[in-house]
Every structure is written in structure tokens, then in C-alpha cells.
Image (cartoon, rainbow, N blue to C red; front, side, top):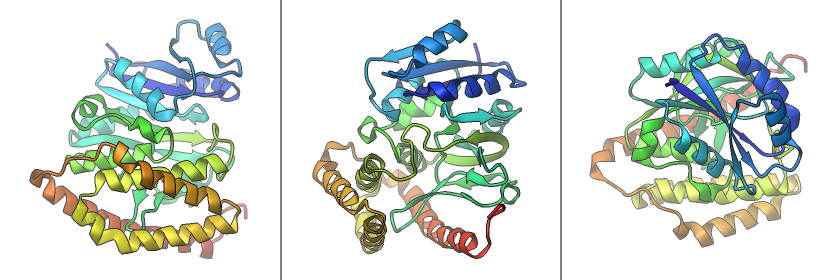
Length: 330
């Protein structure tokens, strides 16, 4: 049996599949299988895959159920100890699979490990070095738009970016799978947050490199659909994972974070979409399954709160760095 299953969720990603699959075929470590989960594509993706990769295992969903449902189908179908979730708009570099497996083998306390994601069209710049979260309620990509050489060391991160991360499959049985109510966006932060409550760690593996187009499915960094869903899911994220006392403690900063974001999205033309997402999240929050509080996890909650505070300072530092030091090519 293979040690790892690479799960590729696909929705109308035919234009990316050739590069994605060709890069996987060049991996040094052959001890993996690839599983494609198609979310009701209508662009000929399935026909292309069946023609060019007839031996590839495929799970076909009848419509677009979103990222969370797609990867859950793949994780449940896998039998390997590890699963790698890989976006279709990526090209992995040599050693990618081997390095992710190595770091997980060396760290039995790890639930996941995030790869070094590099901007495909600006390979001198980072796309993601693991995801972070703040007491303002802002999730952010660690290292985004910074020089790649600044992120050479392994690190603990708040959560792994599910666009190119490895997970210990058995842990999902203990903490739950990706929340399908999220559909897409922040679902990886949610499951990483949940893992931290249960005492697991999320790591960053700088030796596992992958080039990433970014927004390959949604088509742009900001759009009505993405802004609304991210705002809604942000409400879910905090409601589900923070006990009542932690929500009360963080309410002032979460409220300030919402006001700042509302002003930002209003400025770029998505203010109403952001507010609509917040309203939907608040009105449907009780449909989410809240993580039951346990005194066993009390120390983990203290550690999470400390990470939220540290993440806020890291966000400010990286933001100022990007503004004060021009990226290469600018």
C-alpha cells in the first residue's frame, strides 16, 4: 500500500491539468497514488483526464459541492497513512512528496505540514509559507509577496494551506473532517484550528516546493462570491472554535477587525457582499457544529490565544515589510 495519497479537487480546471500531472510524474518518490475528485466540471476535464491518464482513479460528483466536500470524499476513499491535498493550478518541484512525508515521519505530533508555495509567474516571491490567524479575525498567508529566500527554515504555523499540504489521515477520525458547510475558503484554517484545540501541531516544510497560480478556480483575488463566502465562514470559524469566554475576550478586536475590513471592501466595491456574508454567517451560525469545550484542552486554548496575539504582530510586520521594501521586479 502506498504511504500517501495525493487528492486533487477539480472544478473546470482542464487548462491546469497537463502541467499539474506532468510535475507529479517527475517526482523522485514513487510511493504515492493520485486521486482526482471532480466537482461536476463542464469544461471537458473528465474527458481529458480519461484520455491522457486512463489509469488515474477518479471520484465523480454530480455537481459542484465545493472544496470541502470534494477533499472529504478523497480522504475517506484513501487508505494510506497520509493524504496530500493539492490544487490543480500547481506545479510541484522535485522532492515535493518526499519532503512532506519526511517531515511528518519526523514529527509524530504533527497533524499537517504546509509546503513552500511560490508564485508561479513571479518565482522569486512567496505565495504561502503556512497560514496564520489574528485576534482581529484576519487569516493571512505567511510570507505572501516576500522573497522566497526569507522562508528557508521549518516552522510551526497556525494552520496549513490546503492548496498543497500533507495531513495525517487518522487524525480526521478524531477531530472531524473539513466542514462542508464552509463550501470553500477558510475551511483549511478551520480544520487546522480544530487540530490545535486537540493538541496537534501544524508545520511548515520549506523543502517541499510548489509553484501556484492562485485563484485558479474562482478566477480573481476578490470577487462577490469569494468575499461573501469568506466573510460568512469567518463567523463560522470563530463561533465553532472559540469557547464563550474566549469569544467575549476577543470580541472587541474581532469587532474592530470587521470594521476595518468593511471599510476596505467598500472602497474596492464589495462592501455589500462583505456585509451580506457577515449577516448570513450570524443568522446560520447555530447550524455549525461547535467544538465541545473540555478542560483537558485548557492549555491548548491558552496556546492558541498566544498564537493569535503573535499572529497579529506578524501580520503587521509582514504588511509593513511589503510596503516599505519593494518586491523584486517592481
